[in-house]
Image (cartoon, rainbow, N blue to C red; front, side, top):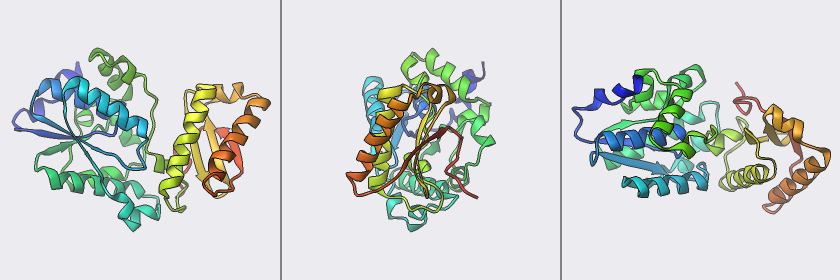
Length: 262
């Protein structure tokens, strides 16, 4: 199997540093690496408003269970006006701040959980990774998302393997609309609300110039009755109005990267 050679390119490294977001890919890589190189792996996680608190909590639980050397940091991207202005390549500035911060703590080879499927999408963060010499084991051995989920199951991480894909919360904000800490908190609260009431396969709470757009997978959209739509709209309006935002709430079919405007 491809994953049998996942880290053979790194056997000469004394220690490795892995940037872990709390999603399927990076958690799987961290688990595999720690078991492959016990005592030689450092895990770095940036706990910022763009990362859902539940992702950080999930990481802490797994780190304690696996005995990882975990360091929670603040990448300080919210002090970067380039990031806050939310250009189409915002991810470049996010990853630049992340890897620059990790580099302050270690000179070790930094690894990320990027996979071969990511190469098919617009991923400006990969340019930042190249700048800091970050390597991507899954890309190097040709593993995609489905194979990583299978690897997670093989590692005994069944719950992790079934996590839905979920980019950072800032990716929900339409290009050109400034990123605000409190808005990201409201986005996460709204998605938790939708998950609790509808259990969708995919949900994204987007902030666009026209208001709040809740995007759902096709099956979930078909289950959205008029009463449930009204209820969720009112509760979402309440969430945002509590922070002083007067947004109209809309429901739409999920579209990958629909908040990015070129």
